[in-house]
Length: 111
Length: 113
Image (cartoon, rainbow over all chains, first blue to last red):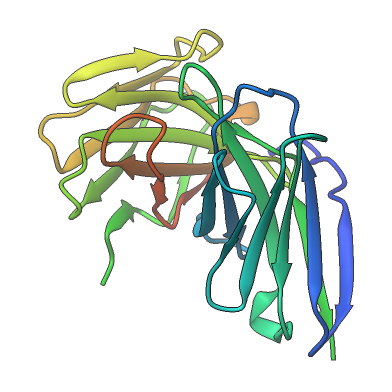
């Protein structure tokens, strides 16, 4: 069967609070960053992206912040809802335009 | 309105018995990708097609093959599945190269008995 998976970092947040999920990247030449949400048993779903010429981008209830100085990316979810429970992956594209995935963070919403 | 469709959603096969997973897209995207995802891990790229050009990742086992008969369809063939091939298989598409956003299908969960 399937091999035992790695233990995902987990973030537990109270329903209604804001969530902040962090991601560090290693390639200073990366110029495109994406956040995906993956619910259990489903494929990754695009949430929001940001290019390296920006440091902030907002969507509906989500904000992505990019700090190129420290190579850090974060996803902020406002007023977290039960439907936000999922694993969140950050991804970047390298010089070959290949998508490089972060490890993923499991977001748990407490009622 | 499904844009990337994968069939079947669940597939059970026996050790060594060939299996084919299918993916179709309504986005008319040039690029189609196949990923393998194991529990609690990020997706791992197996290969991709840019139009009809096939691009294999260096560490993708020979056991995995792919076909893209037209723009809309792409197939993943596993010639002799082993227990270690049990995983979620994800198909994705993007308009152009990797630099464009990839849109994923719901995945096919493969079980190998």
